[in-house]
Image (tube, rainbow, N blue to C red):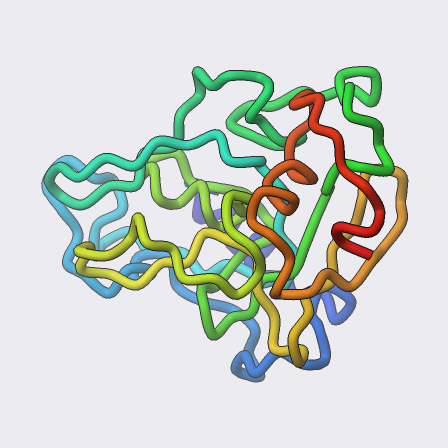
Length: 211
């Protein structure tokens, strides 16, 4: 993704990667260097001389709620690579999750879900390692129910919503590790939604709590 020769590939868009309800621009691409709307900081390789346009998507991978939020210049959201496995989802930094690692069961574990472009642009092509908050280009936390406001982001100068969201009335579409797809109500209890995002939390969840 750092090679200009690969830019045409990273900029490709796929119609099936977008939800019809999304109100993204027709181009379906976005410039990463302008992701947070702030000037680039010293030492960051993503300078004004290095920008790349990425193909967008409305579907991001579930990382459970394995993250740390730190406030230090220049306003990073730090993704933790050393997380308690009971809190981790299928996808995280350099993840290699196998189906047998999903101890909670593939029918009880989120694989992917929706994110509307009105909350944050997301990309199918990958996450840039030069800045921690760019991990959220491809990942979403299940800590909060869909379309919830992320209280941890208050006080930051850029708007970034790391969760799942949609433009559907009252629901977001989620895909499970067994291939099932379900519309999850925005009103789902945060604890239930978080539990569905982990691979080995060993939580007890009844179907009545979310179906």
